[in-house]
Structure formats: structure tokens, C-alpha cells
Amino acid sequence: MVSGATVRVMSPEEIASRAAGETPYLHWPERATFFAEREMRLRQLSRSHAMGDFLAFMADLAHAQQGQLNALRGVPIPDSQAIDAAARRGLPPLPASDWPRDAAWHGVLRALVAELLPAAPAGAQPTLQRLASADEVFLERQADALLTGVMAGLDLASAPLVAGALQVYWTHMVLAVQQHHAGQGQPFGRIDDETLCPCCGSRPTASITRTSGESLGQRYLHCSLCGMQWHMVRIKCPHCLSTKSLSYHSLDAASQSDDTEASAARAALATVQAEACDDCGQYLKIMHTDRDPFVDPVADDLASLTLDLLVSETGKQRGGVNLMLLFGEPDPAEPDPQPGGG
Image (cartoon, rainbow, N blue to C red; front, side, top):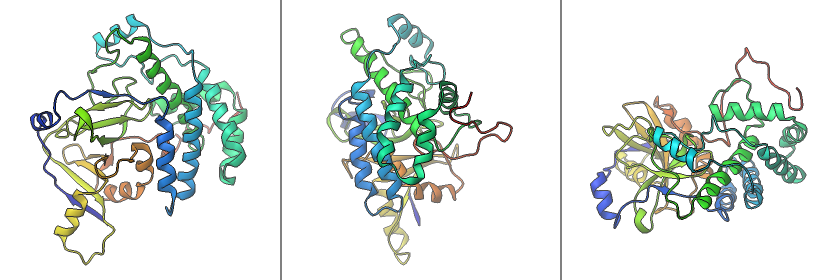
């Protein structure tokens, strides 16, 4: 069952006063550990989970992603003038839908597929084999569909693998921009739409509360593409920015004989919650590192799909996106593309 709890959220002023200083706006992915930590969490969650095989395969993908992130170098990134121009316009400097993608991401995808093929489950083999021989036209069409959110022509079976390569590519570019502009000021900052990633303009997968340093108790939205995390005060809905009616829901594994008050108390202390807004009817999951220090926005989102199903029964719609598991059907007006075709 799903339990709901309305939890008092500190005002921005209270949060700032308890954070022992100014709250950092951004938290960067770490090149050496970013996907490795996700792999560790996925393997932990896969044990005794109904979706254990899928989570284990996603762990294998994260392992391969880490190797490719470590190795990727030398792709074009925006120069100082482009970054300044984007800042003046209130836009992200590495926009997912418009950035001229370098073909290096094709090599990342092929390397991921080659690493996964030998030990992949039987059900994944046909998709991996199709991707291994897919031409650049097909790969670019899939990338366009993923990065624009247009489902027409999207091969849902291939999507997590294509997305995995794009995540490596965008995470590398973000870190390369940071390194290139070291000592020249922060290359990334706030954009006009604070609900989207300030680096690539993508939607968040979930939000996470941080428990250390100057970020104590703060909520950060986690980008579904480049892995950047950006701060948003918890008093705001991460979709419509309303400050009026946020409530929190969680899975309740206790017996239904428990009273409502006990159920609500458990909901308020859950590691993974659905943060729902009555104003816009959207929800986004929120993960709490003070309740589990190893929580990962992508991994824990995949492992808590039951929460999505139950919250959707209340009429709320999911506001985030997890590129590792997409739902929907291609537009019937569009023929399903065949990997390897022209």
C-alpha cells in the first residue's frame, strides 16, 4: 500500500541558517566514481528484488559506463564565448536537444555493447546484436528521440543502451568544460528555467537530500543525462515551483491493521518518497542520504517502480524521467526503425 504524509518543510531561510553558510548551487559528478557508485547500489538493490535480473543488467551497464567515462577524451566542448552567450540568454551551454553531437558517442555505444554482449541475459542478446550492427543514421535518430522526448520512432528496447552512451558523452563534456575553465570562474550557473538542468537543459530523474558540509539537509535535483545536481529549496514543487501544497508518499510494507498515524509516521521516514504537488498534479521522487548514505537517484528510482504505480493511482503524473527505463509506444504513423537499416 502507499502511505501519505504531509511533512513540515523548512523555509529557505531556515535551511540556509542550518547549512552553516551559503548553499552550493551545483554538485558535480566525480569522473572516477560516478557510474561505479551507481553500479554498487544497483547490485545491492538487485538482491532479493522482484526486478533483480534487470537491476543486475543495469549494474553491468553502469560498470561499462564507468570504463568509458574514464577513457573518453578529446570531444568538442563550448568555448568561453559560447558559455557567456548562453548565460546571457539564460540557457544551458550544452543543450541536449540542440548540441551538435560528436560521433565519439557512437564509439562509446559500440564499446558498451561489446562489453555487455558476452554475459548479457538471453532476452537482451537480440537488442545488443542489433545495436552492434546499427548504422549511424539509426543511432542519431534514436538519440534525437531520446533527447527531445519525442517517442515517435524510438526503439524502447535499445533506449537504455543508447541513453547509457549519451550519459557518458554528456557527463564527460560537463567535466571537460569544468576542467578547461578551471580558475576562470564557474562555467555553469542558473538558467531561466530552474526546473531543468543548468548544464544540458534535461529533466531530472529524482531529487536527493545531501547530508554533509554546507549542503546539510539541502535538496538537489539530479539530471537524467549529464549527472549534474542543482539546488532547489524544498519548499518548492520541482515541476511548477508552487509553494502551496506538497505532500510525501512512500511504500508501506506494514500490515493494514496498523493505524493511520503509525503508517504516516513510517511514510515520513522512508528513504525513497514521492513528492507530490496538488497544484500541478505532478510528482518527483526524493531520496534521503541521511536515511541511507548509498542511495542513488537512478538506481533507487528503478528499484521503486511500485511506488510510481501506486502514486499514479491517486491521479498524479510522474514529472521526472529515467532514461534507463522508458514507457510508451512509438507513433503509429511512424514505422518502427530497424537497426542497421538506412
